[in-house]
Image 1 (cartoon, helix red, strand yellow):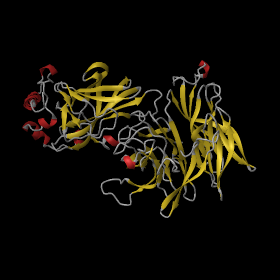
Image 2: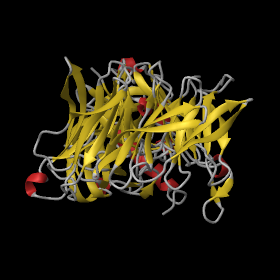
Image 3: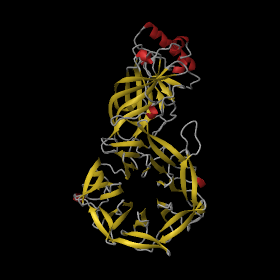
Length: 632
């Protein structure tokens, strides 16, 4: 039956409802109801309802608190976390009856082992009404199938606004559900909503506009009608054991949704003001990636899309952005000239700068402008495209896929533009496949290579005849260097990680290469001491005081079982965020935060006075990754 065909029947049902209310009778059982309930908009056309909607009753007079902020921007506590968000309250389109025997069902989708503890419902109410309870159930089908939990929720009712029809739009929060689900799609069913006056209560229809979660907008149904548009609501709960979540001194600053804000971040960088920046190859206004910013404002971290890539020549983002000496953001991207790839159809890539718009925006925050520093012209063009770093003179360096074994390339500001240059090509053997690059305080370049299970620590020094390579340390076979985990402290010491897998399992060490009496000395400053199997230090950074911070992942049961490191993560798998600090010449290991049973692809990006920041590639409220902070 279409909406047009049963409109008249709905009005008849509304009249029946008014008669019941006027006589003060008990709620009529569902079986006795007209099978087509009126929506809030249809009920408002009746004189009996219209006269009541015209009355103004201040929410304070009814005992309601005003909601402090719209649901879409609310900050949740560690115990109260939004795990599914179907969009904020609409309050203007229509709403569906959830009492007098009628049931409205909406889907919600979650990942992993979760416990649902509550929900936020957005309702249309008559002036002066306060909702006090509602029956709920979580099932595998609309109001049916497998029942995962059910009950009656006590609720709190907060006023948001009054709409054009005279209804109050309220945020109604129910708690105490305690329903465990695996990953998948489930139905939230609501019925028998209670207000002391016995009035109808309506669930706000928003059709999923503004929703953020995987699986949204919800699929919805009404018990007497069938398929209907989705409603405005959030599901609240907590992650199961091992899932990354705010806890104690660790706080998730942003949960990526996999929608316009993208997914799977890989590191952030911070400016002097404590703002965080990153780039993603997905999300944005065009779906081709974005550059984003997280800013602390009004007691919360606010996510902003600074630039959305359009695809094609405008390309798509890579993961890396760095802050230049001018405070702008720089990074490599796809796009540019269409002259690369075996068939000549691939885009060659670019190096780009992003800066705040020079013009004020009247309607909201401005996006940033993009300037292309250099467009690669072909496969042999030496444009830096990975591990970008600036020197003090404003020259930009990076590794590049030029030659048989990789190279280091440079972009130099010149006459209002930028000039590219190949400064060193690696020669093979251990001297191949550069995996990291840093600029030392002495102006030299330092980095690591990673080739066939071995590699080296190298130095590149400028000279009148070009750049000269000096090998500072050569690793033995099976001591694989992990790319990117190479940092430089303010005293001129280099730190990195290597991974010994010669015995079948793997074990990381953290090393330093330090200048001493005109030479460079290699020293292992930490290695695991437990009976672990694969034990990897997968990320490393250093602060201004020379303290090291990293991410360590270990299968604590693998070695004892005799496995070779190929086993999947299990109940014996742990991840730590850790600190290494030095006192009286001795290094000490300090675990800062432990995550059980979760291989979560984390990156620690750096420490500022506000805390240690990093990302997880997955996990979070929607299993699409997080930006996190660990503070003292």
